[in-house]
Amino acid sequence: MAAKTDTEENDHIRAAFRSHGILPYPGVSAAVAAGARYYATNVYGPYILEAENSGTTNASAEPAWSVGLGDITPDNDVNFKCYHTGTLKRPIYIALFTGAPGEAGGGVEVAGGSYARAQLDPDDANWAAPVAGNATTSNLAPVTFPDPSADWGSVTHWAVMDAATGGTMRKYAALIVPAAIAPPSTNITFAAGALTYQEDN
Image 1 (cartoon, one colour):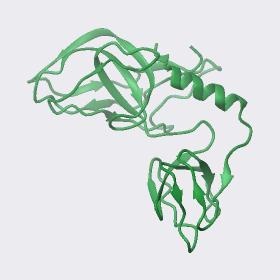
Image 2 (tube, rainbow, N blue to C red):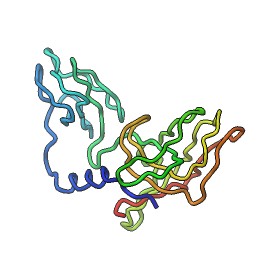
Image 3 (cartoon, rainbow, N blue to C red):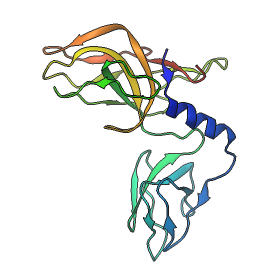
């Protein structure tokens, strides 16, 4: 069972006590702080637009938003990233580790040898709905990594990350059985149901 990182715990605490705080688009030529969140006023949908950096919006009109999960819309010198309302939905990436992460993140992630994190977004088709309020979810779709072109080492842990590289660790867990991955290994896959975590652990 996966455990939450400190960041995930803090996000849930903030969400539990936040009833307001998402503002309408601030208008033209408006100063925006990095991390500020808004909703669009020129398109209907469950979207949160988060400023990736501080700056000033354009001087003419609200932009035409790109509203795919994780899409970036430039607005003068501010980049807004699109998330979804409710529990903030970000693109999900599964990462592999040869050194154990912990509540503060860290650990030793696999690097080189054609390694890349595998993306499995938080869609109903990808993750099982909790049953009888148990807050447990698992992957409905397989999670597949590139074939290694060099030794990845002994993979001992996996984690949920919110970016393809860098970013923030949301969950982490040890593999039941560590896996030594090196060429000519192929089809490095977590089968459906193999990744399980619980929101309230």
